Length: 197
Image 1 (cartoon, one colour):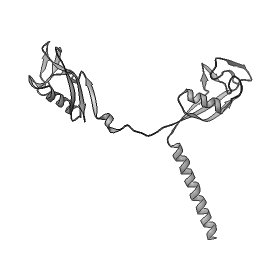
Image 2 (cartoon, rainbow, N blue to C red; image 1 turned 120 degrees about the horizontal axis):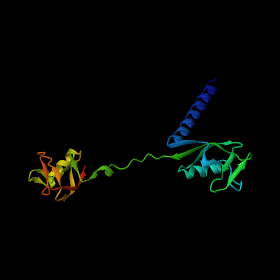
Image 3 (cartoon, rainbow, N blue to C red; image 1 turned 90 degrees about the horizontal axis):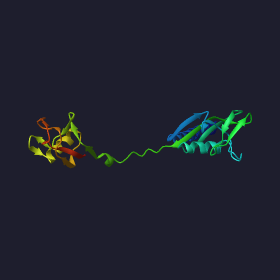
Image 4 (cartoon, rainbow, N blue to C red; image 1 turned 180 degrees about the vertical axis):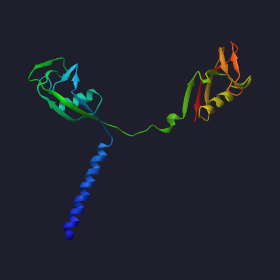
């Protein structure tokens, strides 16, 4: 009796382990069902023009044309009436033309997030502060260049400015420190700031 019980426990564990293996292999797949799939405006024919490939092969090629890896399922639709052959402009007309009811496509997804260094720096072209271009100086003629760029980057959530470019004769700017406005051709601003984490 104990041998039979051990055997049942072994069988139960075996099938539960097999179920987890198949579930983990499907975990990274993305599926999509295409109901009544069309090709060139008409229903897709179940076979190729020469009739040598039907069903799964045609469904695989259709899925690959749409950017998926392969077809996991396909269901035939009998007597569609008008279908287009895959890879050809030829049509099938009449009651003998079969198409697909549905094609299920799958693609393998890999979970490879980008490395953190991809987000370490960001380029701000013509940076703005409260709707105005960022002035070249923190306050009027004080803290110009690097100090103003660092202050802008700090406000944007970065540690410091890695690089910046000056632009002369900007019509309207605002200083980051004193928040003074400057109007006219004597104002200077940043053309670009690269911030770094």
